Image (cartoon, rainbow, N blue to C red; front, top):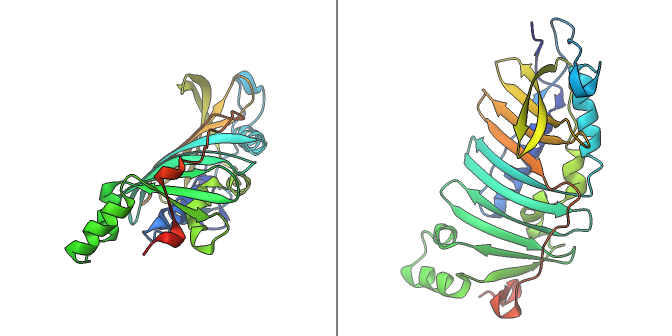
Length: 264
């Protein structure tokens, strides 16, 4: 019999990261997420077997979280359903401040992001995104926005308060800090493959039927490879890869850059 976890108390890792993704989506759309969970009730957790020996399910997830928090760089692939619509994003980031990725917000469109260092951020929006943001303006204004910004990168100071939400997913130190989880009640499942890597599945069920499934690498370092949330109002998947690999985040060519202060 698997244990079930009531709410609320300590925030779950998957929801902390989903909340951060939602903050990043305020590039131009206000999205708010949040859910919490706490200790279990029911039967004691069965002990695991296989590559983790006699560790219990909670001990395996704790070990995976601790290992994940040592990463110097990683890539994160998000596919989330929120109360304000779906968000998809792929971001690679490191502790040196380099970051590159894309984010698609519901029907708003797609934004690309490059942060080559901790000084500047470059953003490029597709046509759908630009049209959505100029909706309601006169045809002349809409045409001017497209002419000025289509295909070009908007440069802004990384320390500008207005850029804060844009780079939420680029702060690796903060992202790693989000990997906090009340893991009591986690139950071991079967081994499977995630992104070509062997992984052990572990599940944690919450009051109301919502469930997190963790996929932990069984070869090499026991990194978290994926977290899948099912049930509830905000299901989604967070896939993690590229641990400790170099992040390519090169500033765009000057001819393709529009400085924020030059906007009319």
